[in-house]
Image (cartoon, rainbow, N blue to C red; front, side):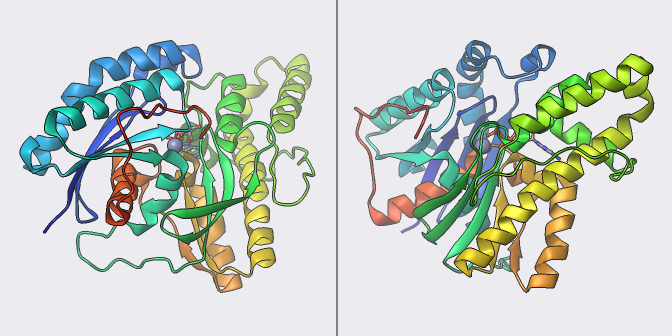
Length: 337
Ligand code: KG4
Ligand code: ZN
């Protein structure tokens, strides 16, 4: 019998709901929150209020687009963490209520595991190329920069992590210094395509093993800009594309060099990227070249699955359902999970 799951994602500033049947995505709705743009970053209190306003309409639309009745849902899944606690509470509470009302199982999902599992979502044409295990994945977003090894769908080990900021944070914070609105990552990517990536160079910190560090880059970028602005107050305006291209090149090369090191240390050549920053064209193109050179079997997610979405929560929940891994009404979200 088919298994139909309603999945909810509310860990940061996107309210998302998806209906997943036997691992196939029937619908995946995402409501973003423009309110954070003028603040230069996500304001947690405003994010949870917006989730509260969005959650019912988003779930309603997801069910309608999937052509599914509430009675057909076999389980409801939600992001338990990591994320902003106030945001997680909205999705968790909604899912608990939905499970109780329908007398159906509740499934808690780890947001990071879900990001990596986008590579296991089958395409509609049935021609999906799936990674084999062990699978090495770089999860790179506004909140995380992590290298993980997946031994199966639900067993993941972290082998590298950021010791300070995430890569997406570096894009966003440096973008703010160039007067770009939040989130600056996609804009930097766009501007970089018109710039010279060799125009400026920024120091790359040396971090041990497979860990990352991005806070030093933000500081050196700030000092560099202040220095240049003393001589020419219009320096940023005049050099925006070159600044973006050089900054992107620096961040991307830091990410790629650790991924190469991780592949060499583990011997794994099944390699993927996931998370918001995996939308970056510099990272996608750079990795495609490395994959060809190094014989990697590379997995790059479709753009629609790079940022936070409930489809990834649904696919993770499907594998948990198959294993009978459910949770109880006493479950609580965890900001650090
Ligand atoms: O996964 P995500 O939607 O949310 C988190 O879990 O953080 O990632 C959002 C992050 C932001 O920092 C945003 O600037 C970055 O992903 N981002 C990009 C691009 N698209 C999104 N960074 C660089 N280039 C992009 N094209
Ligand atoms: Zn995320």
